[in-house]
Image (cartoon, rainbow, N blue to C red; front, top):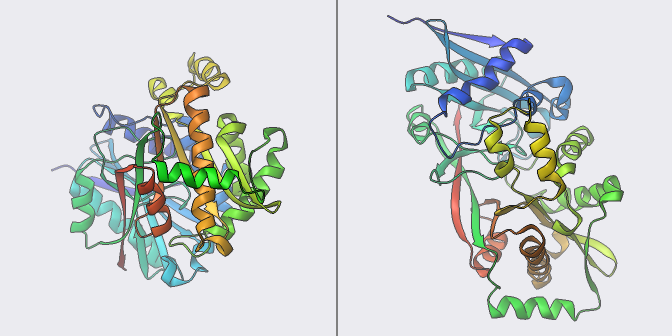
Length: 383
């Protein structure tokens, strides 16, 4: 009978093995996008990931007959522990994620180790999968297996849902993404709302200036931390994380794809859109060498993509219950839609993730005739 061994890892060699496992497990899945191995490794390395400035994690590997057959991460975010419990985290709530396994019994054994580690750290509740920061890839894909994820979104095997639920985990929160044809103009009522905003001298919607990257990032962060502060799962982004995100995303930041809306000269809303980097990195199979880096560099100079993703949008809380909030959102979406089609050749947009009970954002997505294309589920249970 095969002998299953699970052990906590902390060496660079084991982290590389941790990163390599999905390449084998998803080798026959045409919709899985291999991450760049160097970037995936950096997310697991405390010295290279600002999230570790307020969090800690333990990675586990499972081996059977000399072959790695599973992995999982258990982690605790100290900022998440300080958040109100009604917003999803709060005192005593740890997380697990980055879960992959060949079989259900392997997953159950890995999950037991992750839960035991969390208990040893004083945790009384577990949420998962969250890989690892809430700002990275939260939730398990439960709908939308038939097409590839966009940049910074997750993918998973369909059987994982049953394994998690069989382990006693209950659904806690759904996250959705919306798909839309951006070659089509928006409905007449939306166009009238946009036109009204354009005629309002108090409103200005501008492009960001990449040459003032840090200054613009600070404006967006200030709006983000205000706009999202009451949302489920919110954990404020910290300066070390912002620095990491800047390094990671700056190559795919383009002035005309990120907008800041001002009301009476005060920045009150923003929208970030990214060309779908997954379209460029998928053929590289995780490696920039020997020629992948050159291909990627050429793509970054003048990206032509099918899909644009909107990962973040926010309006200051003082405006969120007003008609002005949706007007500013529609204006930013429309201006970026035009640029995406005319300058980057895009034909499809993806908005999200969005909390399934975020009425404001879901109403905006419905108004522009988009449809839910992927659903992610966060689960939880008491330890």
